[in-house]
Length: 278
Picture 1: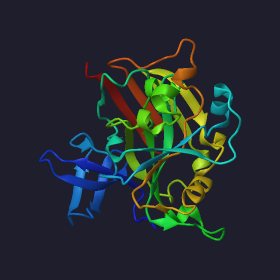
Picture 2: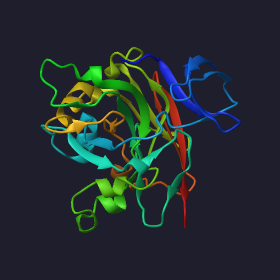
Picture 3: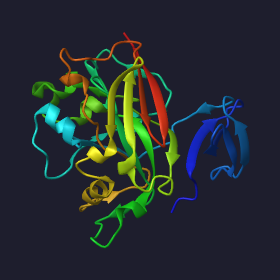
């Protein structure tokens, strides 16, 4: 379905936004599908943006790594445990993440140990619903990228504040940075072979193979289309491995100025600094 391999979205020095094909240090000439422009830019002369400009919704999968379920003391779920994040949670791979005074006890998701949650992210490329056993869910995938499911455990753990729901705690503005590139399924035919690593201020916190997923990419997509429409552009965060901050002793909550880097083999890394607004 995709006609790209490793797509990058960036802003040039004149403030124009383009799409380019990443190839080592250079960005090969490619067609900007919105502007119809052929571009060629060298690395370092651009600002790398979120690989997609907008998403209708972000869907997260919780408790989707076996070792993470074990560290949390929870049984293996029979079906994917899902939650949603608002569209305004989307952020770029190198943006600062604003932390309001109402969001305390931060946690990361998606590839790290202790305070964070690094995750492999799926970008849906074709709207789908009610996939049959004969359908291949991967046919509806535009590509894969890395992401950080930032969470405010303050709003997540206490049932008086959360009502037992996770979405509010995870949906503050820019609480879902993704990037730096969008890799096509031709470049990543088997996501289970990828490896996720997360560091906080240079200290490794998570280092896990994606093969530890309880529900793989196909199972997640098939489940999410049961009686509902999965729109093109939807971001699916597939879950974080073991090493979440809430389960450290003492809990390793993020602090002002902390830098979280999430790296996925074959995709690259994102790096975001937490900036407290109080």
